[in-house]
Image 1 (cartoon, rainbow, N blue to C red):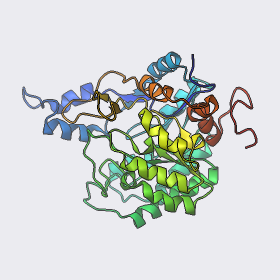
Image 2 (image 1 turned 90 degrees about the horizontal axis):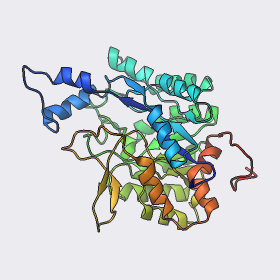
Image 3 (image 1 turned 90 degrees about the vertical axis):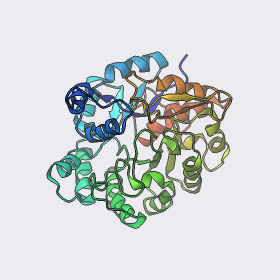
Length: 359
C-alpha cells in the first residue's frame, strides 16, 4: 500500500556520473595508482568533481518510484549536473517529474575563463531559465563564486546575504520557492566561510531569520532540514527555530530519522503543514547503523571508504522512518506530497485531496 495519496519526493538527483575512465586516466602514474582512501585519491576526487559529465539515471529512479509508490519527483542539480538534462528527463516522462533551476553555465564560464564572479550575472542566468517555463523553483542551494576557495578569500554574512538578495529577487519575480542548503557530507572536506564545495550559509541556518523578514512572499525551504549526512542535531534545532518564528520557511525531512519528526509536529508554529519529504535520492550517501545508539541509523559517508557504486535505497529507509509515526493520515499526506504540490503549484489528479482546499 502506498503511504500517501499523492507522494512527491521534493529533492531528487536523476543524474549520475561515471567516473571510472576519467579517474583511471588521472590515477595512472607509471605502473602505480593512488589507493582508494589515500590523500592523493581524495585530492583527485576534488579535482574531478567539476569535470565529470553526467548521464540520465532516471531508469533506476523510475524503478524505485514504482517499488515505493512515489508519484512524482522534483529534480534538482548539484556540482556538474545540467539543467538541460533535467528538462529532457521531465519531457521524456510526462507527469512524473518537474525541475528546479540551477546556475551551471555561468559557473562553468567563470571556472573556464578565470573571470570575476558576479551574483548579478548568476541571478540573470536563473532569470533566463525560469522565463522558459521549464522550472518550478530555484535549487539546490544558491549560486556562489566557484573560485572562492582557490582564492583563499573569505566571505562574511553581510556580503553573502547581499549576494543572495539577487536570487531572492528572481524568486519573487516568478513566484517560486528557493532552497537554502543546510548540512554537509562528511566524506568531502569543505571550508566554513571560503566556499570550497559548500556555500558559507550552509553552516548558518539562523541567517534565514533575516531573509524571511526581507522576503516574506518568497517560500524558503531548508534543504535536509539541517541534517544532511551525520547525526548532529545542532543545525536541525536552528532550522526549527527559524521555521517556528516565520511564516514562509519550510523544512525538508527526507534525511531525518523518526525521532526528529516529534518536535516540529508538536510545535504549534510548525506542524505538518511546514514539512516536505525530500530524500536526496541519487546522492548515494550510505546509511550507517549503530545498534542500540541514538540514532540507530542515519545518513553518512565514511572518509576512508570510496564512494558507493550501487544506488543507495533512500526511499526505503526514509519511508520506514516516516511509517513509524502515529499521526493523522491527512497530516502524513501533507508531508509526503501535499505541501510540495502547494508550494510548487503542481497539478494534482484531483482537487480536495489535501486539507488546503481554500488556498
